[in-house]
Image (cartoon, rainbow, N blue to C red):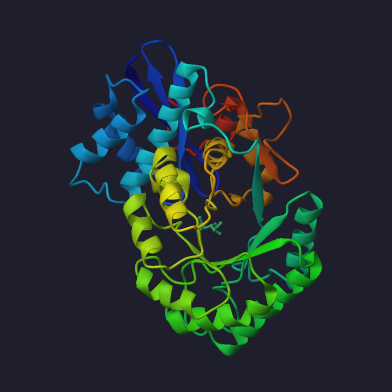
Amino acid sequence: MRIVNVTTAVVDYHGQATLVRIDTDEGLSGFGEANPDAGAGAVVGMIEFLTPLLIGEDPRNVERCWEKLRRNKVFAGPQGGVFVIALSGIELALWDLAGKAAGQPVYRMLGGKFRDRIRLYADCGDGDDPAGSIAGCVDRAQRMVGEGFTAIKFDIDNLHHPAKFDAFNHTVNAAELRSMTERVAAVREAIGPDVDLAIDLHARYDVPSACRIAWELEPFHLMWLEEPLPAENVDALARVRAQTRTPICAGENLYLRWGFRDLLERGAVDVIEPDVPKCGGLAEAKKIANLAEVHYIPFAPHLVSTPLGTMATSHLCGAIPNFFVQEWHALEERAVWDSYVHAPDGSGSIVKDGHITLPDTPGIGVELDMDGVRAHAVAGYGVFE
Ligand SMILES: O=C(O)[C@H](O)[C@@H](O)[C@@H](O)[C@H](O)CO
C-alpha cells in the first residue's frame, strides 16, 4: 500500500482546525487533524511542504513516516511549533489508515485497551469574558455536572478584568486575586466536594503571582492549577510546585518527548497535559505518557479539536495505564462540534454522560460528516481538493 495524495480541509472550530486526508493506491483513505491554535495558513502550508516526502511511502509504517519527515527537514523546525503541529495531523491520519488496513481500531494498534470508556472533563471557560458573571460560571458548572461530567475546568485569568493595570507585566494584583478566589469558591460551593475542579491560568503569570494564586486556592482542593507560568522555563515552574499543596499541571505548549523529559525530570508538575494533535501525534504522546509513568505522573490530555482529533486522543487514553481525564472543550459550540462527524453508534454525539466510549470500528472510528465539514469550511481553503 502506497500513499498517493495528501489533502486538507479547514473548519471553523476553536479558530481554524486543519483536517488531513491521506489517500492510497488501494483506495483506502485516512483522516487526521492538527491542533487549531497556530491557525490554518501555516499548518496547511507545512503539510504541503512535507507531502512530497510521504508520496510512495507505505502508510502502515507510521513511525517510519513520522521519523522520515523529521529527519529530512531537520533545519525546518521539527523540534516544535507549526512543524510538529502539522506532523501531528499527518500522524493521526496515518494511524487511521493503518487501523483501517488492519481492520482494527486504533487503540488496539497502540497495544490494546485498559478501559472501555474515557472520562472527560468539561472546559467551562471563561475568565476572558468581561461579562462572565460568577452566577454564569455556577450555572455552567451545575449544568455540566448534571449532564454526568465528574470533572470540570474554569479559566480565571481575566485579561479584561477591570482591576488589571497592565496586560504585559504578568503580575497579579490584590483585586484580581480576590476576584479569582471568589469565582473558584462559588464554583466549589455549587458543585460540592466530590467533583474534580481544575483551574487554568493560560501561561500568563510570574513566579510570585503563581505562588500567591496557588496558595489562595489551596482550600478548594483543585484537581490541578494549569500553566501558571509561560512554558519555556521548567525550573521556574518547579519552584512554584515546590511551594504549594495545589497540584500543578502543564504541557499543552510543549512538544515531543524532549519537551516533557525536562518537565518531568525537573519535578515541575503533578499532572501532564500534552495535546495529542499538537505534541507529535499518538505514538509520540504514548511515549510521553510512558515517560510520565516512570515518574508516577498522570496523563490528562489538553484538547481543543473536533470530534475526529478528540476520538483519536481517546484511543490513546484507552491504551495507557496512567490516563487520568481527557479535556472536552465544545460546550459553547456543541451543535457545530457534533456536526463534524457521524457518531459511531448512530447517535448525534460521541460524548455521553461525560464520557467517550471507544469504538471497535477500524481506524479512529469516526467518519467525517461532509455536510458538516462543508457547512463550516473556512473560506480560502480547499475541502480535500
Ligand atoms: O482548554 C484549555 O486549556 C484552554 O482554555 C485552551 O482553550 C487554550 O489553551 C487555547 O487552546 C488557546 O487558544
